[in-house]
Each structure stands twice: as C-alpha cells, then as structure tokens.
Amino acid sequence: MSGMFDEVAPGYDRTNTVLSMGNDRLWRVATTRAVAPRQGQRILDLAAGTGASSIALAKSGADVVAADFSPGMIAEGERRHGGIPNVTFVQADATDLPFGDGEFDTVTMSFGLRNVNDPKKALGELLRVTRAGGRLVICEFSHPPSSTFNGLYRFYNDRVLPVVAKTVSSNADAYDYLNESIRDWPDQRTLSSWIRETGWTDVAYRNLSFGIVALHRARKPAP
Figure (cartoon, rainbow, N blue to C red):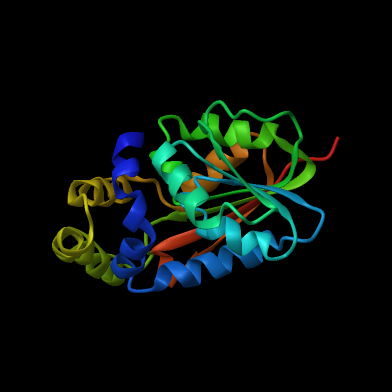
C-alpha cells in the first residue's frame, strides 16, 4: 500500500484540499488545538504524510517527529520542510514503531489509522511510546449521525469524489480506495471502544463537519 501513497505524494496536500472543499485545513487547526503543543514537549505525528500537520504542531516550539510508512511521503516532506530544526522525518510502521517506551508527551494520528492492517495494534504501539499521563489525539473520517446528511455525504463520496479525483490527482485509483476505506471504517463509538480496549483512559470524541470527521482524545494512565 505504501507504493500507492508514494505515487500521490507530490500533489497529496493540494488534492486533499480540493476533495475536502478546504475542510482539511479546518480539521488540521482543530487537531492542533486538541494537541495543544508547547515548547519543550516531544510529539509524535504518525501518518504525517508530507508533514503539513507536523509543521503546524512545530510552530509552538515543540519537537515533532513526523512519521509515515510511505518513503515517498517522507521524501516529499523532507524536500519541503527539511530545514526546520524541530521537525524530524522518520519512516515508520504504525504496528512496530521504532521508538522507545514512554518517549513522547503526546502522540497524534490524522487520517491514517484506517489505513493500518491492525488498528488496535497501532493504538497499542502509540500507548507504549507515550509517557504516563501523556495524551493521544486521533483525527479520522467517521460517520455523520444525521441519516439525511449521511446520505448526501455518501452521494458525494460515491458519485462526485471519483470524478473530481480523476481531474486533480495523479492516481485516481488511490482515491477509490479512500472512498472504500471511509465507508468500511467503524463509527465514532466503535473507535472509542477500540481506544479503551488498548489501555487508554479518559476517552472522548467530538464531531467535526457534522460528523464527516471525528476528533478522538485519550490519556495514558499514570502509574
């Protein structure tokens, strides 16, 4: 699957902005505010892609590790942002992270968990590399609770998104996969239960854009 993301890396951010009608920027702002990065913190931004989310976090002065399983995404991120001293790009598998136990104050993952073969294992790995009392922020596509709005959203994803993707993306098939992965992904309550099952506490979520996206938050228990 990483090869698919390698192919779309150069135009990835622009395509996401077009397909989300600009909402991706609002979701990034909401995620950054939920993370609440501060100078002196060490933050893992997993599934960072080309690093747009990592740069937003690093503006606080926090040290940010931008990790992704796609070498093409990492290369594009380094090309764009390699000169920023408090951002480090690392290729990493979410289910086998190359970091020590308790290494990060906060871990965050945006629009990547549903691309992992074993999401619960990835949530467990995120727990492992987070310090006691540290925080988790997951921003992911979800399911609008309104049946009417959900119907409109499904129509857009099934009928409109593929046409637009063929126009603006270098690999429209990748966005067919995107649509399928969103449709098959569990709802907000189910993902919250997965987060609890893997050992996180204080689990909560709030909907963004009428539930197209949900922002999940949790904390690693203190000893």
